[in-house]
Length: 123
Image 1 (cartoon, rainbow, N blue to C red):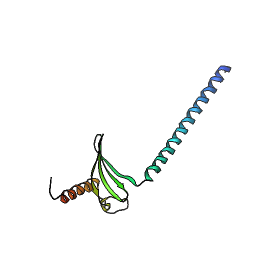
Image 2 (cartoon, rainbow, N blue to C red):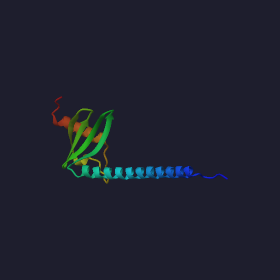
Image 3 (cartoon, one colour):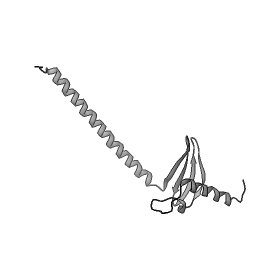
Image 4 (cartoon, rainbow, N blue to C red):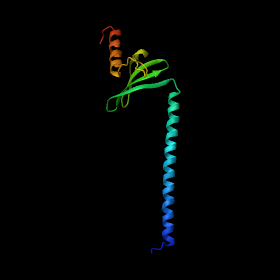
């Protein structure tokens, strides 16, 4: 028969204590991360500016549709610059309940063709 010595019982108790502390730290980290994420989401959506959609066009380059107030703008975001591309009508933006949905590329091409038509063919 194997007798457990006092040091063996102490080692097992220490192992379980460390395991419980580790699990507690993981649970607290998970809860804090969720709380911070929800807090930041509320802070971001409470303003008058909102990112509607983002499309990556190349590494480090994106095009975004942004709602500022009641107007929709298209911007290009690169590593060091942000460039204004044009306006988009609210009717051109795809909504979740709309039966007629347009893709981002359709909205973007319509925006550029409208901009080219408005400039009178200068280029």
